[in-house]
Length: 427
Ligand SMILES: Nc1ncnc2c1ncn2[C@@H]1O[C@H](COP(=O)(O)OP(=O)(O)OP(=O)(O)O)[C@@H](O)[C@H]1O
Ligand SMILES: [Mg+2]
Image (tube, rainbow, N blue to C red; front, side, top):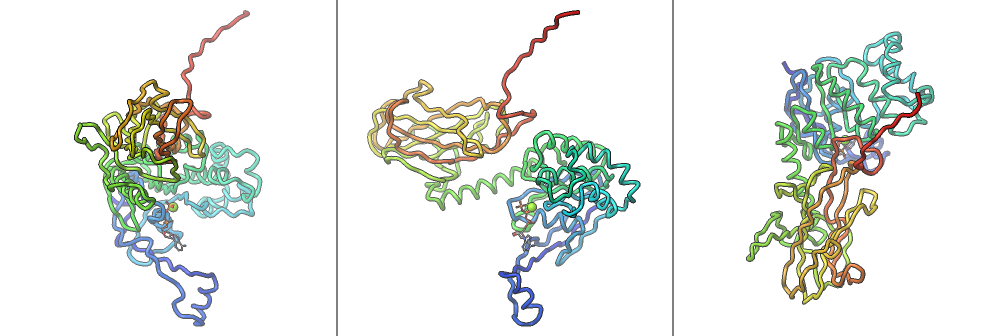
């Protein structure tokens, strides 16, 4: 029995270049000053009670628009949308909190919208406050909250009002790690108690782990509606394609070939694609031909877990004879901080002299440390010389970006191998 039924749902936004254009148009002083934009196009799907549905898609694909329509705070332009049951929504821009009122007052008002009187909401306040854990700020105006605090309170309300259907838009990303885990735990409980949950997120691991089904939106259309791993695969393929096109635009991508392994004449694997070029420099005596990140089964990946074995494969081509070539990379975190680096000389695998036209490929086999989850980049390079003194032939900043996931809660930058011994003295 579907609790959500969507039929040919479409949403058109009207975009005005200047705010007063709308007024001029309404008052007849100007004709058609807006452009039209279809954010959702003919979506049809149903959701049964108890399903957990992940909704993924690139920025601007229509995910938030869809959730706002399901939550009833925006109307579709065409099509039908039926939702039955009590809906609790945690949307992108804070669930109807009034910035001038305190958190406590907002909780009561929010409850009223959901049909709870103030006594019923007061009974829930303790649980909400404990969950949100924002301390005295509960009695401060919401406008003084950080975005994380704001979201903590909104989430605490959303999951403590016994919803039949919970709509969550990307909220988890704002909280700190402890809070993210707390949210996930609560969502698991809601799921296990048979609630219907729709979760919009860019966290693909969360979709495969948490959801029973996923939808892929692309430019307002429903591209895929299937099992989470199938949908995530499709989305990855889409992202690869976008990355590749971006690389080509920036003058990379060489032959535009996404194929990772190209067993050349000699049977040597060669990678020929550079997903991204932010900045490149060097004397041109050799060039990075491609860089790829491979998982245990030698498949290209952009998602890695701490503790996983991966290969960073770099191919370089020599424009002239180079006596002492070095191939290597630097890994950075999302803030651009160097996390680690390695090259053939440093690793004690000195490359033989290269001739003009030759292609070398180096595999760096890495045991990925249990670092804080997030996005990391790899900047490949080829140089000539030795570890201490070398000339850079080609260096590419942030050529490949990947997501590091973690099953553990990691405090700080990384989880170290620690063993603990306890002693006791005295009586
Ligand atoms: N109020 C609005 N007026 C005009 N266009 C809008 C409005 N809100 C959204 N859009 C456009 O509609 C499209 C879909 O937006 P939406 O916010 O639903 O995307 P999204 O999938 O949630 O993206 P993100 O991953 O960035 O959150 C975008 O192109 C956006 O620019
Ligand atoms: Mg959105």
